[in-house]
View 1 (tube, rainbow, N blue to C red):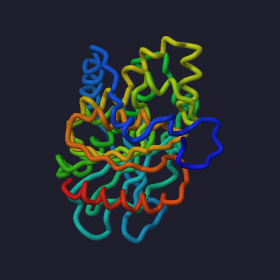
View 2 (view 1 turned 180 degrees about the vertical axis):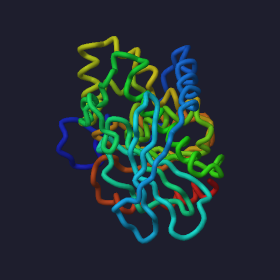
View 3 (view 1 turned 90 degrees about the vertical axis):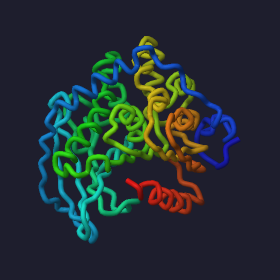
View 4 (view 1 turned 30 degrees about the horizontal axis):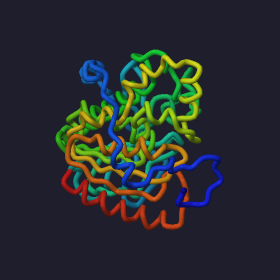
Amino acid sequence: MSAFQHPFSFDPTYGYGLDDLLKIQPPHPPEDFEAFWHPSYRAALLVDPRPTLRRSTLRCDNFIIYDIDYRSTGVFTIGGWLLLPKNGNITRGLIVGHGYGGRSGPDFELPIEDAAVLFPCFRGLSRSARAPISTNPQWHVLHDLHQRDRYIMRGCAEDIWMGVSALLALYPWLQEHIGYMGTSLGGGVGALALPWDQRIVRGHLCVPTFGHQELRLKFESLGSLAAVRCFHQQHPEVVETLRYFDAAVAASFLKQPMHVAAALFDPMVPPPGQFAVYNALAGPKQLFTLSAGHFDYPNKAIQENELKQQLKKFFKSL
């Protein structure tokens, strides 16, 4: 039974309690999973990110804010924001991935100090919008899904790698001091990207999507998964593409220290997929259990503050 009253026609716990969720294991990876991702990463390292900065019209007491553009793979320009501390040295870097709602600006409540913080917009979304990619999540998530090597999520993972390259081009002394945070879409794409990029030394994934594709295709939801399920019903062969973009499978190759916030109730990203990502992590890991994700609930502000305090400790050694 759901922990909250809700208007949905389905149970956003999907019948799983915490004990059940902690037992979910990822699918077996395709035999050439590493052979698929490693060449993509090596090719991305050859791209010159050419970051350009312009002083933003946004203002904040604690940060200097820049609009940033950098070049990603496929000659794709990624737009976003870069925050620099007004006081103190830049001793570490952080990349922050957004959810499928896109991003209209940077966040200023951050669990880290003395950092250059990059807020990129994934290709096709917000400041990285470009035709013919739809900015609608229901269509964006399907872009080139029928072509494994061209699927949009491969490019989004490459946008993270190129964000690291952009930070290091600007601040080369941040080598071995770069972290990643991603929520929902950014959590799932982060899980896909981090195993191959050891320049990112620790990361946080919040309610990550794309976990255990085989299982999540069975679940009704209100998120981008609904579009994938519908497309899969009409084109069942795309399951072969989805096997290479399974965040739980990728997490089993991820060795960096990780912190995951996973929800027990979530109408957008089914909790079994979120916990499959956490359970699969191969390196040191911490779990913060949220009562709900993508949903307002009475103790939300309290839990968010507790999570922020954990992340301050987690990123302190970055």
